[in-house]
Image 1 (cartoon, rainbow, N blue to C red):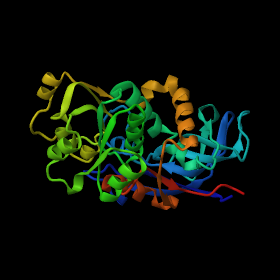
Image 2: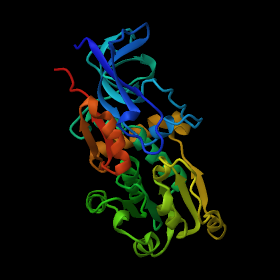
Image 3: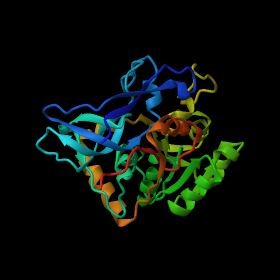
Image 4: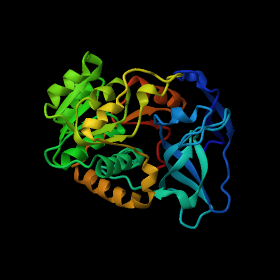
Length: 340
């Protein structure tokens, strides 16, 4: 085992879009676990759009990072040393760690993971992790698709959106997804079973494109993006439509608040319900979601993909790539391989 531990800390608060200078790589010693803790070697690290909000010096649903503080994120790792009765060296675990090669984590907060033919380790950061649970509860509890509904999904080729579309399809809905390339649209339609995909980067009129893909209007909208796409969808909402606001990545790097035509009046004739979505509100039911998602994945009914960036030193690039639309499915960093 290496005697040094590399970690990324927040080097400075970005103005607008982050860049490599936002992150600072440090070398430290490998920490030793205290009573109740486990030393975990990171195998896969998750990077997620919400992390951009933690780089701002203001309160939100997730506490902001201090400059110089290690970046935090979900990890799948291997137990190296344990001072906790439930964990032994060599076991694979999922937990809330940091952008580091090694970390000591509270053993009570870790979850065992078991790779298989249809369930690689990295999937526990995607379809079987926070994104999958977000899709599960957001689709079933907020969007509530029923047979004959039309459900629109923005960011449809991402970790959350790709699962949302499939779950809506399982419920009998017609599913339309917005994505940022022809390759992603093909993935939606050919691999995931979406009824229609719209390449928003090649579309001048989102409203007209949606009208063609969803001529009966939109009954449910799962919003991962915000911005002009959501503006267009709001004009097509049917009476009693349900909208889940999960993410607004189109505006995460904006320094000011955009102004323009107000969309709230559109909710009056549609009587649509618009609800913010935080997966942490459903923590008491995570086991239910995990079990159901795992059944679908192991049976092959629920398709998933992970975009893997190799090398711990490339974690910042993996994160920055989220804002360029580099990933299909969940963006993860492969930090190390399991011990033999």
